[in-house]
Image (cartoon, rainbow, N blue to C red; front, side, top):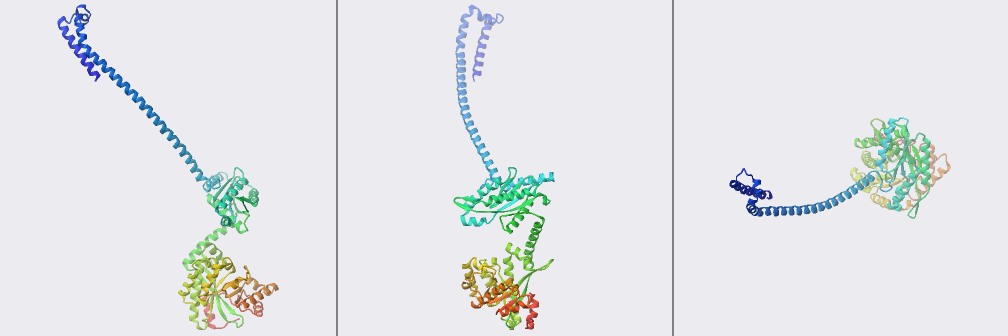
Length: 544
């Protein structure tokens, strides 16, 4: 705007000068005109004429300058305000970055450190083990070791003193483990009560044994935890990197874990070094578990029956059902070959239910096929896991209803431990089935707790004398006296007594002279399949 006013003033001035030059002549010159004294009046008029425009321009320029100054002041003020705001934002960003860095460090600690013991956790241990294994691949002569530790009977400590005390024990225990190793080694908590140690440069096995012994010495000292004096031990499994062609960290952990369970089986509070035999056993167990599951699906189990006789007249009074596994490749397998794995995996429950169901079905069929033997009974061994199932009674009732077998024809064999460990629930369970007329026998009597008091409180029908007493019946007078005492006890309590494992005529004769009632064993009859039993029942005689 100011530019337009200035231009307008100069245009007006130019027009005025032009009019003057027309009167005085252009050639005399504009400069001479304004400088000559004669023209002073004209110059004054020109000045008066131009003064308002000049003043206007000056005033406008001053105003513009003032506005510009004001805008500058405002701009500076806004700049200072923005600067303060930016400083605040920068401070916030700085704090956020610090918090984020702190959070990242915490996440890293959480990802690679155990929150309870502050030891490296499983993830960090496996990462270091992976790097160590890579080093082994580059330097074949390099040897390292992995120790896998498990606190013995830790569940008892947790159950007895509470999880808080258990956690505090793990903290103190981890400090002792850290104290036992070198600075170049790594101890980590794998979870729960399991720990692992990575031993660097373990060329001498004796050094590893010394480390394991050193750890065991540390564990023998009592732990003082919040006023509690606790004794704890660990079972240790050890694997050396040169015993196998290891390509993955988990393979080393697997074998160290196998060795650790061997240490537990040996009695706890000790260590075992992994070898190829352990691996073969573990592979066999895994194969056996897989095959057992398939056996249930493929119906590969079958029952053999061993007759039980009355020693007074040699008549068959019943059978004990014995499970066998007809494996497609290995042939007929005995319970000794697979029952331990079945117990460990819990497969004993469906297998046991199948045995009871099949034994009841077969006995009902024989009773119908041979009416003269309708009083025969069938005995079935019941595992502790099956006995402790909440629906055990319902399962037995359902099987009896399904097969149509009278409850009095079924005898369930249980061991003493199943009654002693949980006496009240066991008594209620037995009484419920006793009300149905199911019979119960104590199997392997004399080898368990032998707390005779329970015989008065549980609805027991018979005692089966363990074969270990029967085998030494004729060679050990003490055994003979024990068998005689058991027979007298059973007679006094009006219980049936059955000797199992009769393998010689001398054993049978001595048992008979002791007034024994019933017997079974290889000398009398070997276990037979159902077809052989049908042939035996068809003859109605016993070839003793």
